[in-house]
Picture 1 (cartoon, rainbow, N blue to C red):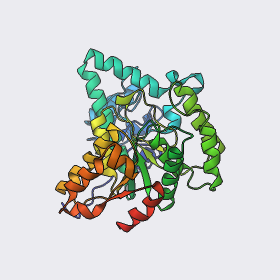
Picture 2 (picture 1 turned 120 degrees about the horizontal axis):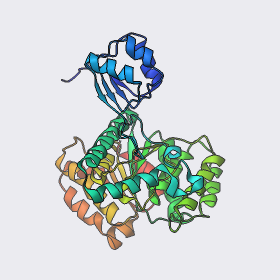
Picture 3 (picture 1 turned 45 degrees about the vertical axis):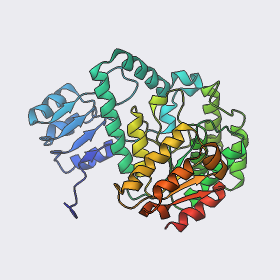
Picture 4 (picture 1 turned 180 degrees about the vertical axis):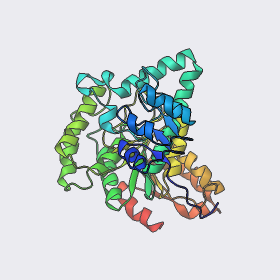
Length: 366
């Protein structure tokens, strides 16, 4: 299989659909969540045999024709607050649509409410929809990150805006983005938001960071009001509209934690285990662990395991930030160092005192 090049058979936008149809043949293509109600003539006049249509609205005569051709048609599912067949990652604007009416009115909050009901009734159809959605998100995430050098930044959700720690995480995100790396976080509040914020402000002048931090400090936490917390973030986005890109990978499993608005692309999952493993596996340029609690400790050893066994190839760099935190408060570093002893990963782990040391340390790993 090595060296084989597979054709791109996925169509995820109307523009891509039109380009393919211009050649007169949709046979074998996978058309993913594209509204085809205005493309009836195109569907009636081109070959759609062996095609697959995933959640594509289309006129009844077009649907009948493509089915007669032998295409598989998975129709849109009505009355869902999310699209299980989506072909692209989320944007903050999409997840926080209707925020002026309060966070509870947003697609993000409504999807979490749906999840709570679906888990309670145990419906296999709901479970299937969640699985289809998460697989589609993974596919979109892989496509988005093709060719990128991704560095993961992990840390706790409790890190408040307005603190020195939050400002440090923002500086880190900015430095990594300016070094040409794609910052990927768990996509939530706290340290995750700060790193995405830094990447978002990487094209802006240095003073923009201080101004943004001041604006955000007016709503230090998503508790008690997610609405106020999110509105402060969008005020920063409005003040600095031309932000840099980064990735957030949150989960509705932790529905009380909203996604942050500074990741340009958001891969939000229903299954937390899929999300956790996917985030670490895609951080091919290394992972930085800021101070956190149980979730961050879990991520350290989730990342250490494939490095220990070499199951993903060469060990990826792991940098733990804050010596006192990781040796005294939560002594994960001594265990990580003991695990690494005598193995290839031993030369790929580091403990540093501050975020300012991370870029140089990461660069030294090559």
